[in-house]
Amino acid sequence: MKKLDYLFVSVILCVLIFSSCRARFYTPNRNPVPLFKDKGDVYIDGSSNFLNKYDLTAGYAITKNIGGYIGYGGSGLNVNTSTTDSQSQVTTTENRRYRGDMLNLGLGYFLNQEESANFRFEIFGDLAMGNYRNSYVQNGNKLFLNGNFMRIGIMPNIGFTSNDNSFSIAYSARVSQITFTNSTNNNSTFWQSDLKRLNSKTNYMLLEHALTMRAGGEKLKFQMQFGLYQGLNSEELVNAVPVLNASIMLGLVVNINTSGL
Image (tube, rainbow, N blue to C red; front, side, top):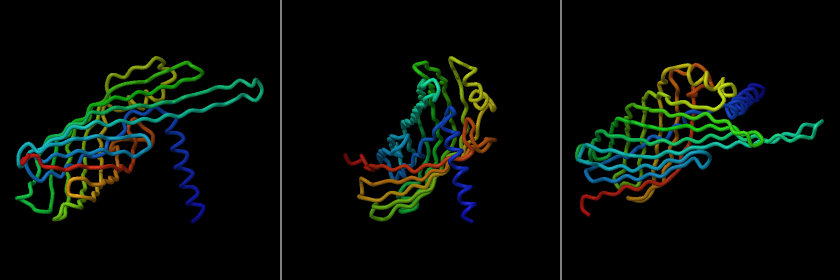
């Protein structure tokens, strides 16, 4: 059994090392979960995994059943290596960097508090527009591979809120399609394998699950969201969109109602 455990860990480590040497094209943002209750509700969420990404989202309940949100997601990864040839004593420094930005918009329906006191349901049409910026620098020589993407889909949220509004839990599933566009680079030979992965499909289908838990006061709560992201039509473990990805995001959420202000 221990041999199987060691083998599993070794495979995971190899995948992570291999992945770090390849260009990245998409980093999922966390699923926005406003859990609106009534007209005038305001939702503000700031979350991060404290490693390589963060999200900021604000939402508003326009009517008793219609609400929307707008958010920004940022991500980045920086890997530096330095090797020295034992014979020539020449040192080679390398830097691989990835940066991504995403604007996320949503509009949809929610079940208000008069219709359901504790059970929450909302469903949003979700649109995201973003970019990816990959660079490789060796001894001052910089190569880049950049581009844009658009993601469009639908996201239902199902949850429960306690009577005193101090605790809530929700499950959401964002089903969407992502299309990459406007790819540019300054050395197609160097990025050949990454371009092959990027261009292997016209678009990718995504299923992004999230379990969200909140606890705290009536207006300010601590939040934890566990996300599991699937590339439904990805054929390789390392692809333009990974077959499987996961993250834990931590943050704070503000919920207030502006109707009486």
